[in-house]
Image 1 (cartoon, one colour):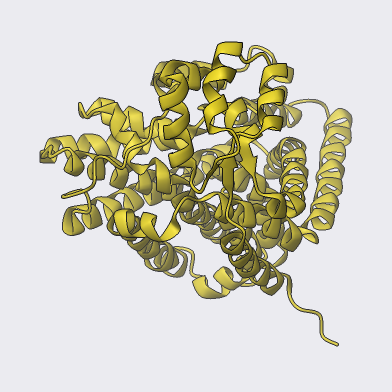
Image 2: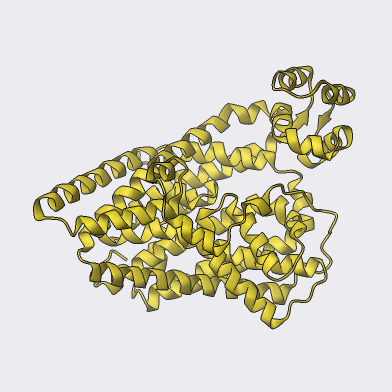
Length: 470
């Protein structure tokens, strides 16, 4: 019997997970057990007393549950204890049975990220050779990332101005977002933080820009030492990269199970999917349409005419990492699969992929930049603010700069929007309007980010004279 190909296994798992999540939606209830756990975790007795009247009542949506809790205990107390209250009131035994598979799969992928980035970048740079080769490749890579990000942002700007999804938007359909302003970083802070004061702290905190900076520096200076140590270090990091790829291939085998666990929980936890679609459908449609144009037209044209390659053959080769990126909403977690597909399926050399892809997973955010631009314009339209041409240019430039620095920021997507809103004087609470659909759209924009990274690897490899399978 012929074995089902991995990308078909993932697609089947994705469809089954959506069905499973719809059949078993999440509910919330403050039970006696919930109150007991909260008391043990230090919740004040007066708050426990206030929650007693709603004991054992079942709430079908998270929004409805949060609204009731805020009414009972007050907004300030809820914001202080919200995570614990929601965690212990969460009811979905059916999803709990399978969500652990997604948790383990994501943890396994994240376990690989830092050693893979470190070994791939260092081995890639030592294989590239001298500073001239590295400089040329770096310039091409960065130039490609800036160009595609600008194309993406302009596509988003065009669609949001034509469709105007924000006019008539329901301003009451807003959710609170805590701590975004505190997490903002200036351009100066982002640039300073690229240089780690302690590389082991950077490893511990998964500070990707710092890790990439160190890896590039380390790899470059390996080429400057004597022949014997250079050979030993080069062989060590090449061997380490080979081992990491073997582990990656092992983890990839469990992708369908991981995807099933992740997506089933995401779908089950979504409040009122039909109502959400009717209220935010035009905004979601605008983002998805703009991402679709960038994904299926702009990037393939670049691959065909600049990379002199077959874009849709490459797209087929990338099916596994793209479906994984869509399901996990993490280009970093998908990186091991992306490297494997670009090298094994499309024929890009390790020298190119090991340099361009880790860099791309960190700073090349086409889908995210497009999304931030559309989101900012949507918020402006919803609040009745007419942005001038100059202000829209500021949105484009800010979205570009924010997307490059996003890797250094926690809650990157939402924080980036607040940076853009601040730049053009829009209310920061506007972020609450788009929060309900952020997780869904995150899946689409992450897949676009990964597709752009892989297209960049093909274009740059071709420009370096490599013979590819596409």
